[in-house]
Image (cartoon, rainbow, N blue to C red; front, top):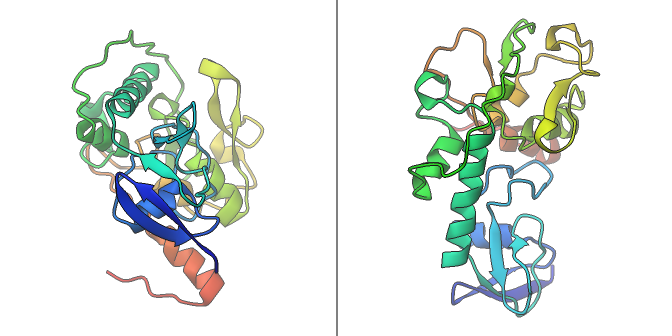
Length: 240
């Protein structure tokens, strides 16, 4: 397979042609923050946390959807990128109701972890605090749109891996929400297989198992690699 050579943060990196900047960086051990991306799911470029600077380009590029090219010179850590990433996290925190102290994912939440990693210790924007109804009609799980960051991981895993497409997105802008079925209660949808994949890939407490209390919910996303490796290569090694 063809190989391209590029420079990331002054390091010369070789990667497979057709791979993304995010893939190349991860293979080289270079951290690029992201919340919507998850290995095993199609790239979305929605959260914009993975924005990087590409020499010669007038705009920032989303690393998860930008393919590598021979001779690229990329910066993943600059003052501009840090400022933008902090702003994105603040906007996510202000858009819904992310009160960590009473969340089932407190201590295990990817949004919380990313905020700490990027040094977000306050929010400069007005909190919108929408009052969105929770859906506990499912026999096993609960959906809380107040904690949703619209990463669409749940939508993609339901469609691309489980093949049910029970979940989808509805609305535009601030009115966008994840829905079940044709916007009917989760428990009334006939397409849901109750597989729990959406629960495991959700980065926040927006989807969780019934009965989970504060800080009790831990999610294991490596199941996705296990499933896909089993399907494609007939390798079923779950590991530890």
